[in-house]
Length: 190
Image (cartoon, rainbow, N blue to C red; front, top):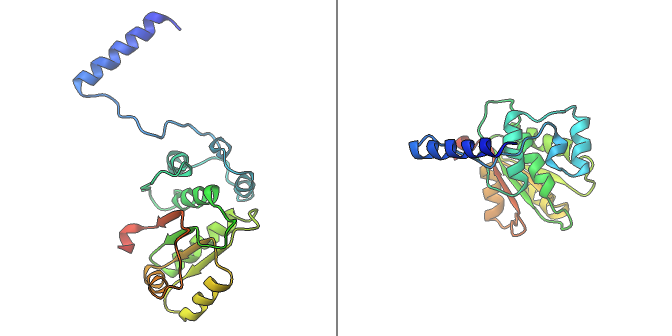
């Protein structure tokens, strides 16, 4: 590279800043052509291959690097763009399943969505023998949820707001070991 070209580029950048039209940078400077570029755990990469995914979607390319670093993420995209995989992969990448405790809590607004999210966690965690998932929602006897939390406390719990609140209020759900919290479709949960 020519030194004069570098100087010209630097001057051009400074002029842009003075004019107020500087390009704003973000954390999404990492370019990933495949999921391997995210340096995910081998168990996750195997599950991704099993699911038939080769390349991350645009939203996954933007959000996964930040999410696996533990950064708070607000992810917005159209339906079917891979938002669920963003938080599922990030949570499983960071999960510590050595203790029998809820480490990840996902809140969603319907039982159907709760089951879909549980299915995604199950698909991507299939090579994590120690990771357990559970789902709780209203309209069913709360006694089953209490028993599940007591007997085989899941590391990942997906639930609807009312049922999670009820379990917390009754002190059946303990979140003292929680490391990740996901609010899916937050506009519908609030």
